[in-house]
Length: 287
Image (tube, rainbow, N blue to C red; front, top):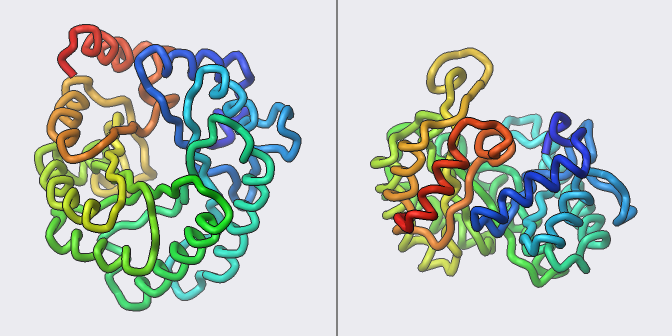
């Protein structure tokens, strides 16, 4: 969630969720509900805050919601206040669970802090990762029967065998129910063939650790930012034939695919052809 889309009203989200339902989408991941500056939900369930609105409309269309926690001062340098980040997210979970736990659409919890194989290989970084995710996920599991999801990513030229070993170690400390791996194609870290090899090697790792394995398909094309250049990150919508290849190559190794992200790149409101081409593909029965 971000301020741009948070400012849109109920009619906008009614049309967005209705169009999702019409092409067979069944789940929505609300990436985060609070930041250092902004809060996107209200303690009054019927209030018009954006998260409340989306959940209310999701109930109408029988869509599942995975509700994200908060992004605050989460980094891995010496100034990172781990205990504060943990406590803020535990308190936020308490608040969200108290408000939305009775919603029939609430299907799980999403921890929005993203891991990768570039920044988290030192012993120092690993200790922080293990403590944060184990503490937050354990608290959620103690107070909710719903699954916990994360969505990590991998770097350029990934060593998928080493990456699998990294996750085997991670799961010794943290109980995560769903892992939706970003495929890295839209960010131009890898192509869809290289991405599929990572997913192939990770499939057994997820099975071994009883983790449901999903793919987070990037339906955008980065035009600025790492690894392209040093400018601020910027992207446009992806070519549909590329997205089709991503699905074809990666889907065999996962139980479900989600996309990043619908309102920015995929909605029929954008008239860029992604939604319509996907809809035609479904009608043809070739996906």
